[in-house]
Length: 268
Image (cartoon, rainbow, N blue to C red; front, side):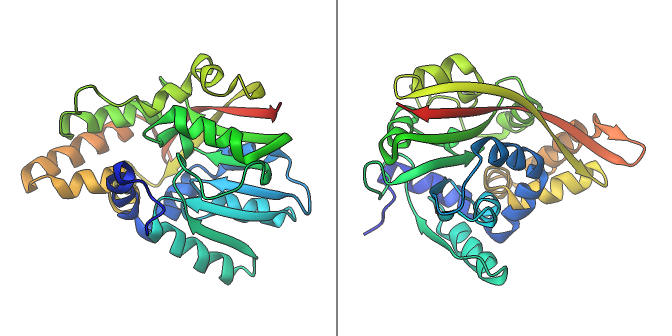
């Protein structure tokens, strides 16, 4: 029986579509991941959950700090790549599919939970927030990175939006609501003492065309969208995506500053 709830099977397919090339997306946010791991401050021997682990970039950093890490994600294909990569690096990390809104873990099982630009994409944020609190022990910690609601990452999604199918009615909540500290307080403030720190991640590529190649091949939402379009519309999306990234040209390539929050919480 699948551990993914029926309403999340389609999102799981979207994230699956990036496969192992999603690791290139994590490379592009590696600075923000390091920031989040630093603020989590994992200790040797702690049991830590990396929620929405993707291809496991964050979990590998946490494991190198000596923690006992479990990585969970709705994407079985990303989990398979993460498992292979950890084995290649000689890291002992357990990976499994898991739905952020209904985690397969016991109450208070973890000393800490980390999620780097992951849990914000859960389709039912209240359920995901409740699960974060449930699986984190009293006195334990969470650390999250979430893109600001007016960040350049959000603006990239706005480039893609005209090519997407109309949302259902009522429309699901935007993941970028996690980019407002007021919303994070609403979701997590009852169970955690929260503190926030703003950061900027710098996404660099040789040119804007390389950004299209990276995202259209490795980032589930962009790849799934491109595949869904006919040849003409796909060419238009490519044109607009490249034009957006050309707006961040430097003498050496492109460098896109992407703003985010790091949220650190201590479980009450």
